[in-house]
Length: 109
Length: 116
Image 1 (cartoon, rainbow over the protein chains, first blue to last red):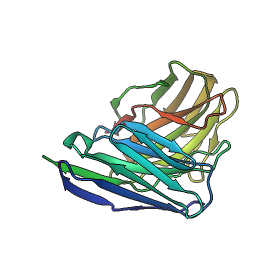
Image 2 (cartoon, helix red, strand yellow; image 1 turned 180 degrees about the vertical axis):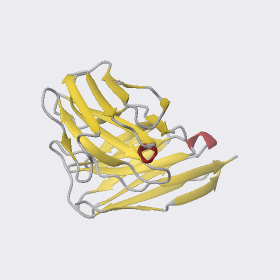
Image 3 (cartoon, each protein chain N blue to C red; image 1 turned 60 degrees about the horizontal axis):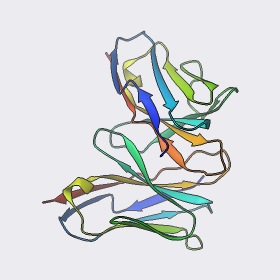
Image 4 (cartoon, rainbow over the protein chains, first blue to last red; image 1 turned 45 degrees about the vertical axis):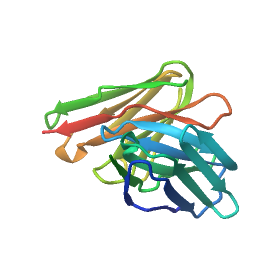
């Protein structure tokens, strides 16, 4: 079973700050997903990555497969970024995802 | 992009009744559908995995007779909570994976079930 550790669990920051959320996992994977869950519960897939780095707007995700570590960065954070961010490694094949406990992010104006 | 429509978004039902939750992939064929539940402040927990045309595979501790999953077509999967009890109150969400080799997941918007 893949053990997933996310940090921090809770983060409150001011608008405009650079945000970093970290994720470590214990078992080698084929890909890792970063998900965003809003207060209503809906989940949006932000990134799926298997190596290197991906960028989408103000969001950047990196992964080091050898180190079993991934990070999600948010540049120029905004209150609308307030959500729970979840790291979810995928072992590949027909397996479902394993989920971290999430990072509860609050961006204050 | 890929969209999964999940209905209803919330439902309140009486103890002992059954509730059906639907997930439809609108613009792709979902070979595999995953069903999760989430309790407040907890992470998502996989309940079962279903492949089109075959029986669902349930995770340990999930009662297959209570949580009936049907994946009759490549675009529709349903979860029926039978004889609901207050402890079944939770957030249920599906995610679909396409037939192609891309292992991305598209999530439904979730269903908040309250059993009274």
